[in-house]
Image (tube, rainbow, N blue to C red; front, side):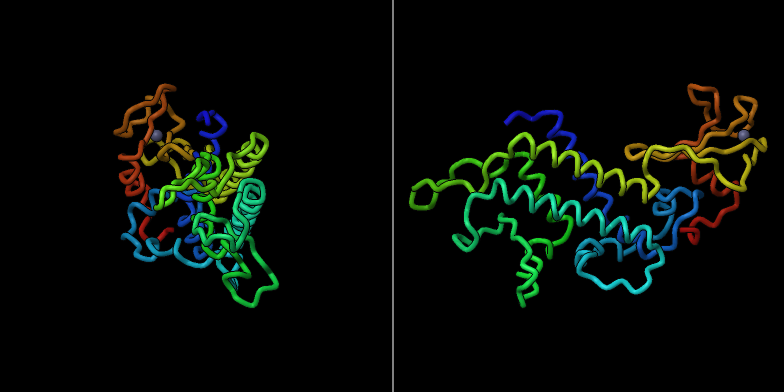
Length: 263
Ligand SMILES: [Zn+2]
């Protein structure tokens, strides 16, 4: 296959979802965050959280009980994203999975949920492996992995486990992955946006402070005053004093926020 722009965009969205999933799971268990301090900075300045390392290993949200989590919005987003990606995997599997179930146990297969089954693994199929697995599986189909005949030990060739993804399903995968990615980034406050920092003025000049965030950029803060502001940071291309990633901790200190407790 050719590595088209559509493939590239789909893979990028799936990787963003995987990369931010632990953040979302943590967000569900944390009261909704204020605008200030920026989420990424709070994490950097807090002690490394061992819980964060194993949080993606937990069962999918759709299979769990959630007694009153602190952040319902994050839980809704998490469940919606799981549904979108799991349903997408079902759709792709139905179209490109070539071997019949039970014909050959192949861990690369996507197993459909069988709600009537008493066995919990069969009841949920591959969904039980969680969102991370589903994203990796969908990425494999988007990249047309494992679509060539396979040589067996005794030398014979067998049919590949998957057919190449037809174009209309590639576009469906792209659309779904980008919708899911957008919702995840919005919920985490990592989409591209500028927000006035509430209740706090520039400690050097009293100007308005604006927080700039984006999915692929580190957060920064600008002061509205311009070069006359005496803050010891550079000015950006629009003549505003700007605290980049490295300077943000000093601004946090200047504003007197105890960032280690303000998650
Ligand atoms: Zn200022």
